[in-house]
Length: 268
Image (cartoon, rainbow, N blue to C red; front, side, top):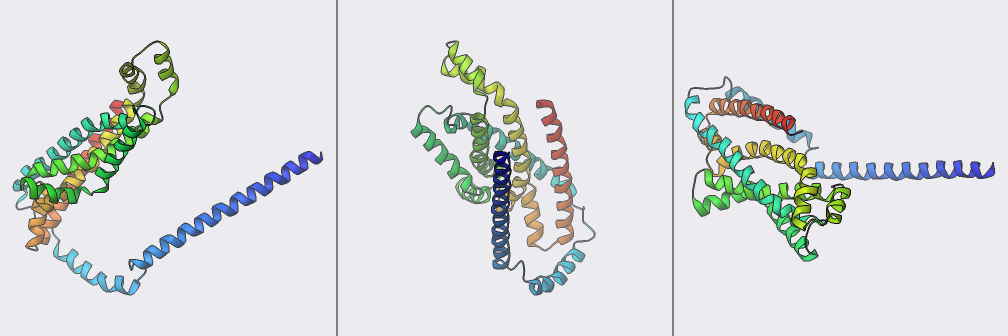
């Protein structure tokens, strides 16, 4: 009886300690968030209030949207869509081998594992916008620098997610394949790939959604696409046309999201 009472007391004590620890963690997190918000003037309500009239004026100048040049936007939209597809395809193609090298359970050696991780970290540490500027300077204006920028940055992100999926596979089929005398390549193909293919497909489709949005930004640095048209309208302060282009981009993003949802269902 006394043992049961002591056990209950210990459980209550542990629960209390855990609750206090979690409360302190939440308070510390909120303090960091508030400090960051204060540092970047998010809590400067006077500054925000002074900016509201300017936002209202800009919104007024943007209405109604001007679709006069909509026929000229079809080709840039196609460029944007093609950039996102090509960049994602290149990223997935290179991310698969990189992921197997960057996963602890499939990497051939510890040094290879660390090098692969460093490469993936380096690729995703540079924003695609900066890569776009570099490639525009290297190969000139057009869709090509946008594709290269999206592809390289995506390899860093997609490769990381692929590697994590590989590290979380069920080891039972892997051990069974090895016990049957399968070679390392056969183990990868027959025991690991079937487990991770649905996750690979999900990550690739989500990345395509992201790359379509990112490709609109690529145009602002000279990498072609609808973003180039948007930047041109902004430079001459044609805010009604800017609003129209933004609405067109919104429609395209919605269509891409709907299509990606259909594709995800197909791969489940």
